Image (cartoon, rainbow, N blue to C red; front, side):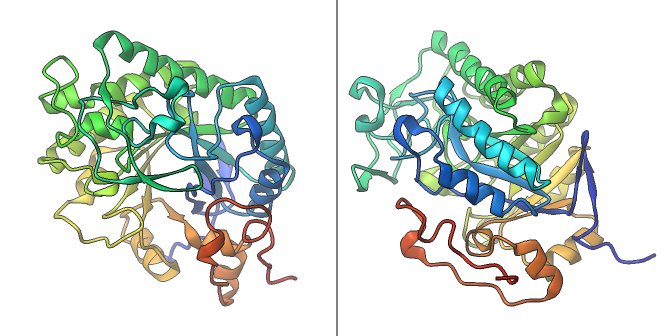
Length: 360
């Protein structure tokens, strides 16, 4: 049997991806007025359309969902229209693109919240992390606990944002259930000390994520819905006492819902893979659809894991920032351009759309 490669087409739901290489979500903090994608954003994503699939930067589902300065939204007509320019540009190059839907929960600041109110969370526990606000980094604000009656509104915000995504021309959505943001705050007991139907047991702490997924699937279809999780990542001050049974249960439930892929951050987000004991193969066995692996993958490691059956698709993050033609470079064995960390967040075209391709 011949060895599988990352450069072969892959059937993802009703889509045919040109390769198994996925562009991971990458926050760039370059939103225009009204948190609308700029013309530069359309160029940026179109330059990277040779990825098998693009997953956009995290995009807030409501004004309350924002946690960082100059991040994009998908809840106003202007934002929908701005994203339509992005999807049109990507599709014109033959690309496929999902939008990552996001609510930051407690990882926010009062200066970013409507009316200067407190950020929301499952419990009134402040995160040990910082956010980017007023052109600098600051400690996140003290959150307030969401009332039980508010939770259907959170679900509705995700559902409406998914509908808006389809109106904007996206091929699908990824629900952000990772990296210490709201849905993960409910999942993990370090942030969730509720005593109602959304706290306590594994099933209760998983409830909000699963309700959001069910609403999105009903709205746009399971074949257009993916979910991202990070079982052991400590990102944004999050912690969990029981990650293996918690995420085994979530993987089983998401598989039953029939979503098109499960995007798993293996280890610490953007950091080491070995931060805590966790059996990712157990998730792979429980989730019957496409498994998208993320964190620390290069061509050699991803190819090995593919041929061992550990994953179907592989997410590459920062290399896509400085190598818009990353797939072509990897296939040709060409050297990769190193990124400039000073231009990662905020700014204009420099460090955004001016990285060279191997063809010049």
